[in-house]
Each structure stands twice: as C-alpha cells, then as structure tokens.
Amino acid sequence: MAVTVLIVDDDARFRDLARRILTSWGYQPESEAGSVTEALQQVTRSVPDVALVDIGLPDGNGLELSKVLAGDPWRMRVILTSSDGDALSAQEATAAGAVAFVPKAELSSPLLHSIIGDG
Image 1 (cartoon, rainbow, N blue to C red):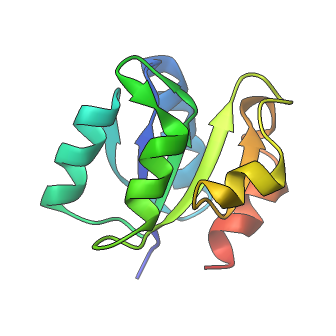
Image 2 (image 1 turned 90 degrees about the horizontal axis):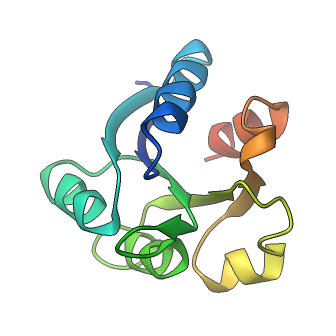
C-alpha cells in the first residue's frame, strides 16, 4: 500500500507542486489543507501516514500543528517545510515532534523522498 501524505500549506501552487512530486515518487497525497484548521479537519476524516507542514500558516504555527499531529491520537510522521531554508534547525524540528525539516527549495530532492520512504 502506498504511503499517504497530507500537504499543509497556504499556497495552492506549492500544494499542487508537492502533490505532483509525491505522486511521481509513488506516494499518495491523500489530502491537502491551507491552514491549521483545515489540516485538523482533514485528519479527523482520515489519518495519513505523513504530513508535510509549512511553518507559516495563516491561522497558526506549523510547529504547534506538528506537535499536535505527531502526538496522540494521530502519531503521524511530520516533515516541516518553509521557503526560508534557515528557518529551523534539526533540533527545533525534533522538539516540535517532526522527523525532519526540508526547505521548500529542496522539495524535489532525494532528501524528502528518503525521509518519507524511511517510515
């Protein structure tokens, strides 16, 4: 069964790009959200294996959302992202419950693919 992914970003173009990249790698972008509120609504319907979460969201902070998604009851793997490549250290991502931080500029890199595939 394909790994399912929730894409959380307020930029619809970024969500579309991420969906196309993830699909080309054989993952299943199951749902999308443009805000913290939408993301929480999505996971109450269906819990994906992985969430790709932007740090800056219009109604909240991706770091706080990461803590929620990585915790009970969902326990999903969260990968944080941002257009600011220096936005977060690995230690800060881990403190937020995420398994990694990947800058948006490196979305199509083997790094993201390997992080999702290691689950």
